[in-house]
Amino acid sequence: MALDKILSISGKPGLYKLITQTRSGFVAESFLDGKKISVGLRNNVSVLSEIAIYTLEEEVPLRQVFLNIQVKEKGQKTPVSHKDDKLKLEEYFFEVLPNYDEDRVYPSDIKKVIQWYNLLVDKGITDFSEDKDGEE
Image 1 (cartoon, helix red, strand yellow):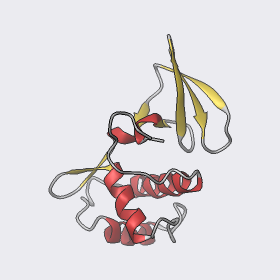
Image 2 (cartoon, rainbow, N blue to C red):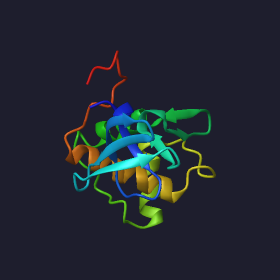
Image 3 (cartoon, rainbow, N blue to C red):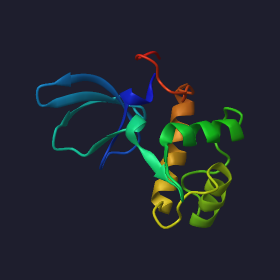
């Protein structure tokens, strides 16, 4: 499944798979519990393929950060949890993305990246390469 079909919905935990679009928004399925929800246009929704992480030089696409984690962990889940303390999370993130901008990337952002990566690995979604013509 491509990252452009995976959503983060503000105020809702975890990630969601885009099922279909409707006139008033879309229907998404939770990766956490499999429940389908209707999401209106008023909700703040982010598509994972459009998210980037600030570094000192540029913005790095989230897919590249996931690839860096995947290489470091040899395709397995991270040894750190999104519930670990701030210092442990920052140390780990420096190993994955050494030049990330500490002033603009908050510990809450690092928690989300680690939580999302582990959730995707749990669901067997491990192809973080660039999408080509909607291939999965």
